[in-house]
Image (cartoon, rainbow, N blue to C red; front, side, top):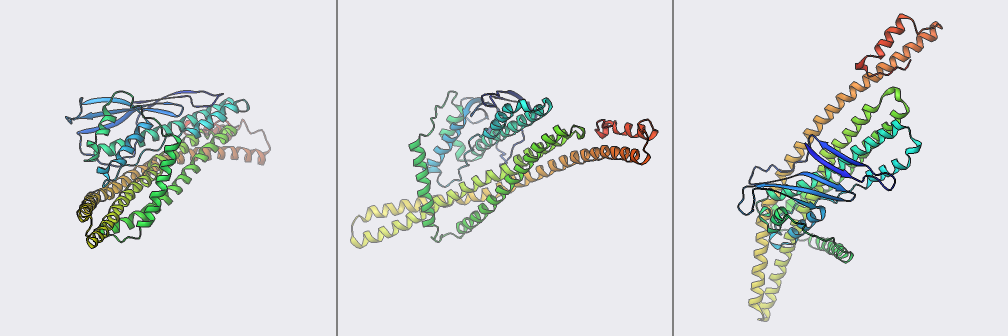
Length: 432
């Protein structure tokens, strides 16, 4: 079992300490890593308000590591630091850098818990308990998702033939002290924003350049179209997930108002459906939005290298006409060509691997989600039959009472109906 220790859920008036034991943490597997020489997982994580400390566990047979089995504690900022160092390494320009995990966001369940604490006086004890349990379940779902996306990032790196050998990656996994990675200040954040704007403008400028390699031209067209479709699917999946969460929230109020229906089971089912859909579909779509962007970044770096190479050819022609700095221009052209060829070679391998990886990931997750939907549908159908049986019993009793206009409670029919309503498999409560 995995222990997820979370604390300080609510605001000023409500502070809950939750201790969760999870039998199985279902994760979105986006790679089939058959290499067992470097295995990484996150078996434990501790959450305190906005900070999450991940326990990163590594098992390896590689001689470059000091121990075969070890664990370290890392925060989200450490993951971002590792991603940024990989992106900024010139040697990896021709690789698809796995997307950085998004920042943990517990704001929504925390706000709900705070509002729940403020409205405790206006609720019944039963309603308050149900809502508290649902919010705790929602918080756990967010927590599991956070652990999952950080684990996927590390597993993508460990399964890559080049990135797994990166020195900073080894430091991240092995250094048993705090990495002391500071957050970016306002100036650095603005610089990053400005850099992204320049990159976007540069992408527009070089997008009109016809690629000399038909493979990359086709891949660019495919990625642009695929990104648009995945983005649209992500928005619709998020809307569907929100709707299911709203249904779960509505069931809480309905079950509190109509105790006789015992809709608590529906609350749990709808909550599980929403969590499973988000884990198996919505989160996968979000991940591939980021992964496609990483692939597009690779194509951008290659297009930039092609533009630099063509500019170096023009500069060489000018130098030869003027018979000035010819050697320097030739060397620059040689380096630009070398960089472009290197990016093209590694880029073909990366994009081919990307296609196979996404097919495996979507197939696996859609099958698992379909199996879970069938499982939840069976629970729903049983619950619906039980509720219908209860209402039918009540309707028959009332109808017979009206038609006969006699005291009905002691008749054989009433006794039979009462026994039916009390059967455990009906899940009924005494309404008469």
